[in-house]
Image (cartoon, rainbow, N blue to C red; front, side, top):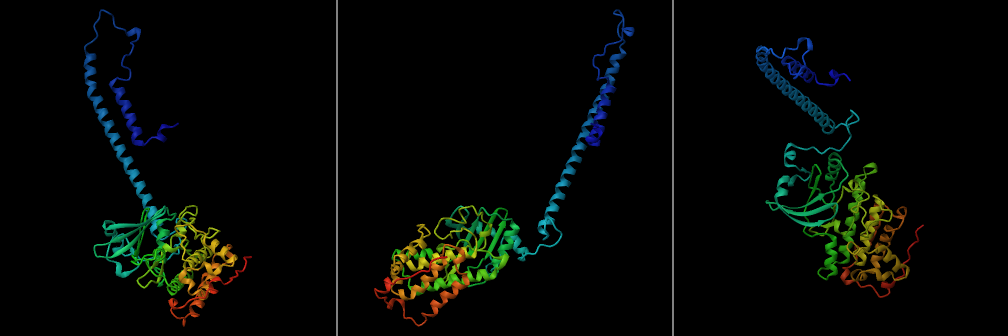
Length: 433
């Protein structure tokens, strides 16, 4: 192996100089054996000049060592400069590929929905979509008092009250399989949604593995909390309010699927009572939308056994329709499945087969059973076992609106009583093909 090709030139010449300096001092052979012809006689003293020569070589030795150490220092400096330059070039290359809007494998711009980010937003650590809420920074959220509302394997939800008295719901996401760029592009689309039945995304933060979604806090809580208060006898839950909430959820879902069509479709993937919030007028607000595509399909967060997941366990419109059908059954029966894990579709279908259809209704719904049967029919179609047998969300909304229009002139539900016969009406359900 050629040493000159494998050593830095400075190191190479430094080693040569060190070797030469040792030879000059005569230290490479500390105890030489003199030739016999020139061996001094035992009776003759060695000349004193030899010791003098040894003394005069000491300055040369020290000079060589000092010079060698100086060369090593220069070598270390050169190596450090080269490493630093190499790292800077790599960082510059990565920044050009990711920030410049170009694909790493192509020089053509990536087509994406970009949300303009102002310098103010960069400094605040948040990207806002609701102009009136641009009054705080990320550090204000982190410094404020937080009350944990819910927590699971993939996320945590906090109620945060800022010093300006603004109250927000902050969703902290974990276990996402998404780059910051992909997450930001999707949130830019979600932030542009504008519908009375979809909760607005106020802002988001995406710094490293920390991803936060910020919403306005809803004091009325969720549909789950309303159902629980009703079953505990703490609050009324009349038929017309239930029907209004059903319409709101269907309208919101229909808007989501019309806003993102084809390859841009973003299924919700987690429709359930606790993810349906209520505003001050008890209008339904769909929450938790926009990040289901980034969850691990094998994780318990996406397809949990909570009674809302379709049998095929797949992110799709048909899967969301199934979950919505379960909510319709909850509104009709007064039973909740989120905490109990009850297979409500199975129970209702069994009651229908036994010709006890009227018995599936909650006591409030039983008062207007004759008007609730069409909604029951819709819900059973939504929870069909096979996805191809379920209607699309647009068709579901259309059928629910037919129920609403048929009752525009109906008196207040509290004044309408169904006859005992209505409560035991034989209800036939078409068998699935």
